[in-house]
Length: 154
Image 1: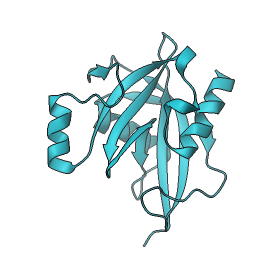
Image 2: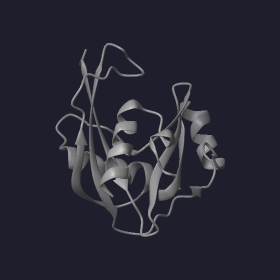
Image 3: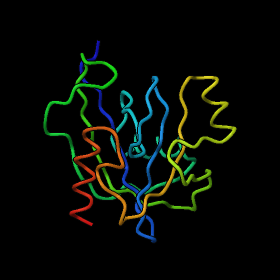
Image 4: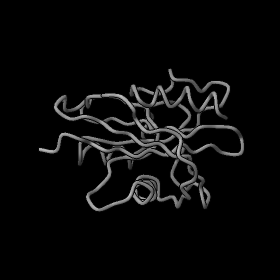
């Protein structure tokens, strides 16, 4: 068993000073997080992020500056025998977002509900206004730390 789980996430800010958040129903839990996911064997972190945005949002992105890499022990919320290592980059959209954007957390459209019926998991996306964005808007412990960094930096 692999004891390390490497995750790569993108911070997307738009021209209106909003932060992109993914609301997910996964493994019986509601989670608000930054977009991204697991690094696959043989894949670079930037390539992973490009792939994840394409898979999740059908969105081409450019991976910009590195923001943060986990520098402490964080067990996985889903498997306590795994250590999470998360890497965060700022990303820039190379095209307009085509997937439906929600206003209310954990609002899923018909296609997203169909995905849930097939896999037991689904996700939707929404913008959070900069003035309302804080660590309380995300669920995962490392995301909370990154939210504080983002607010201080940008």
